[in-house]
Amino acid sequence: MGSLAWRFDQRERIYINEVLDSGFASSTTGTMNQRLEAAFAARFGRKYAVTCNSGTTTLHAALVAIGVGFGDEVITTPLTVISCMNAIVYCNAIPVFADVDPNTFLLDPDDVERKITPRTRAIMPVHLYGQVCDMTRIMEIAQRHDLAVLEDCAQCYLGTHRGRIGGTFGNAGSWSFENSKHLTTGDGGILACDSEELGTRLRKLCCQGFRTCTAVSGQVRLSKDDFQNPNYKRHDSFGFMYRLPEVAAAMGLAQLEKIDWFVAKREQMARLYAEAIQGVDWLVPQQTPAGDRNSYYTFALRFLKKDVSWEAFRKKHIEYGGDGAYAAWTLCYLEDSVPEILALFRRMGLDRRMATDRGICPHAEMIQRELMQFTTNQKDEDEMKVQAEALYRTVRYFS
Image (tube, rainbow, N blue to C red; front, top):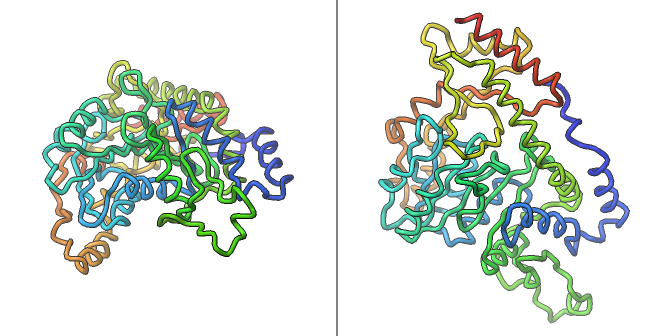
């Protein structure tokens, strides 16, 4: 895959120069962050947005803000980046893994409900590969059991479920600005919600608990006279240091202005991939329910050909000019870092509460080794055609 510099144009430079020309004066007022947050909230139809320095800190701050704490349980998918599990562990809470639907690769609402216990505090659905989970069912379950919902939309910008954008169903939505995502600031993230109380809590958690922070503002110095007074108490709550730098926010604002173009390009690449594998029954793409929109962070499919290895297919794809298929992550509860987490929990008397045995999510365990992910962030139609042709030729070679 070539350089991704095409994702940036004069807009990023203009906004970044605004920050530089200010001499970083806005670092104490959040000017560029506020502009990005207001624009993001408006685009996604939520009342408030709060920027963070990564898509992992967004999850951690949101879990704390919705009340997840020691010994609580949070239900999520094991088929996701490890940040989801780690963010729960940061709260001294227990990640509980529900299985996935083998057709959509997304959290199975039926298994979510089976995994609920009196200690369950929240559900964290992950809108994997650009597709929104069945939020109708998940919200019904959450409301019936009085649970909070945090949507991880790191890979899903403008994906929809029943006409509604992912990230707008639960208590809060979380997006990542990491460099491979639809929008990027190099690294970073953003949270969005409709509750002013939750928005203010998120802001304070991300900004060291400054008393001046609100759902709409990260300003920490409203008055120099107050701020420099030795009797002034700056912090009225506990918090972390999760703020997004102003330069990164400037880039994010420019990227947001191009969001429809970015998503449309990925959808176009996905259509070309779908055409390349048409009629091939041993490559099964992620199933998108009728009427829903998949924003295709990647084009994901199951590789079911028994007489060809996953590795051989990938190697041939690269020989034909393809970027090569990417593998799915090892399931969270099977990662080599889990014993360290269990040791941490053991010191708190919680280790027996975390299930990590093979077999707890059979569908996820089955499809994880089959999944292939193909890149969708091509510069132009010429690059798209190269990737589609590479997949087409690889399929025909092994057919």
